[in-house]
Image (tube, helix red, strand yellow):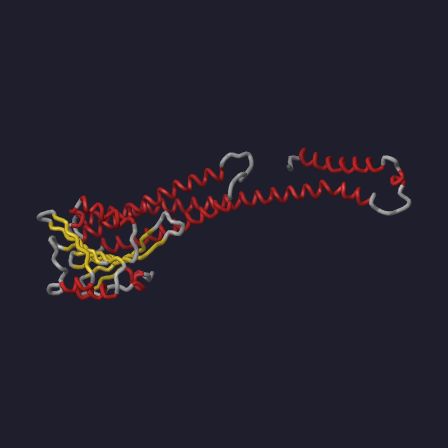
Length: 334
């Protein structure tokens, strides 16, 4: 799907059109973007088809990266200048609240003061920015401003996700270390480990997005086309990204701490269980020995003919079990 957004600074009118490849080719005057009621500023390609990509390539006279090229991790494949176009690709976090959050690459192309975005996912940051445009049309007065607005929205969204992650970790921390009198009592460690793993996966994807965002903004700020207010906005973006990255590093260390603490509590709980079995084995060893002795079938055993021998053996076994148990309690081993 191709969505074209236009803005006329003179009238302040925002225009929007959704086209397919055939319509785009039919309305192409002299190899430039089609004129809408306002000057087209942003061309958004969501899940584009091969025909749509070919049409836009002919329209803008540039070569668009394929989906496979967008997924490459080399810096030279993600950030480069292609004639009049600045091609920038970064991973953007999506479905952060799902059990398996995803990170998908999105390409931003600045060409002749117009913005082109290529994406195969629909993150919430794009939806929020589109709603903001409906209220503040001047956000996309130029392609550069549209790009910076999108990047700022992506940054804000990452900050919101980090805040949610920190709150989740605080809840996990209270659940793990709550005062119950016994370490780990009442905790479902399997569920806790699963939640820590999900938060860790989310944190790694956040850091990946922040790394891509930082590289993109640095590349953008070094371009001669970024002047005046736009250059100031890139500097502010860099400071915001650096601040959020510090929080992401804190979240990663907090996740590692909670993981180590959980594994430690699991180990303590397992040791407690093994200790109980060990104490039980030691406590029942003397009675077992006594029962084994008096279970022997020898004729020369005086106690076998004793009238109260059976009760005496039971009492002796009971006493021999209580004595080591009392000793363990005295030593505070139980």
